[in-house]
Amino acid sequence: MARKNKLRKFAEVLSFPNVYECYDVQQPQLVRADMVPIDLKGRWAVEHFKNENPITLELACGGGEYAVGLAQKFPNRNFIGVDVKGNRLWKGAKTALDQGLTNVAFLRTRIEIIDHFFAPGEIAEIWITFPDPFPRASKENRRLTSAYFLEKYRMLLQTGGLVHLKHDDPDFYQFTLDTIAQDDRNTLIAQNSDIYAATLPIPELAIQTLYESFHLAAGRTIKYVRFQIS
Image 1: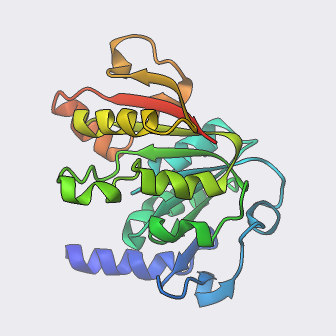
Image 2: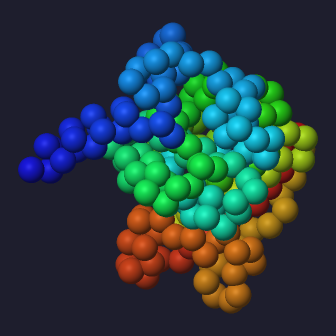
């Protein structure tokens, strides 16, 4: 039953007008609903959102709870949730369509090739919400706050663009802080090892993903980092 449900979601998401997909990492090409090829690099605001509002990415978005939550809170901004799993994106994309949210879209691709789909300076802000921490040292380059990925973000972000990390893992949190400190092009703006210990520092942090609810139920503290890369 679970497999049938997964396949149904995967097939259904292919028809959603707010979802774009890349199927070939070696030859990156986006397709929209019904497998129609489209090139949105540098044209997301004009071609998809039909406005010039700033764009925020949510990376490793899973079910898209953060992207949808941000779109609800900030109607004058645009949001794109990015994940490699189409059946995960189904939830966020379906919710956005059901609620008539036109300022949020979804992109199914590997984050390693994200620079193929956005032009330099096209992105105003990035949120990274509970990604796989890849705890083994041999896989640290796969962590979404590694120096490798920060170089990717540096190509996409506008001058002064922000990166936000929300996570429960203390080692991943410290790894992020260390990575920021190792490059003087990075500027740490805020860090918080337990965001719920006091009043939330920014309203965006009130949005909770499915994974966050699991971590909170298990008694884990939620951490937050905000920084700029230039």
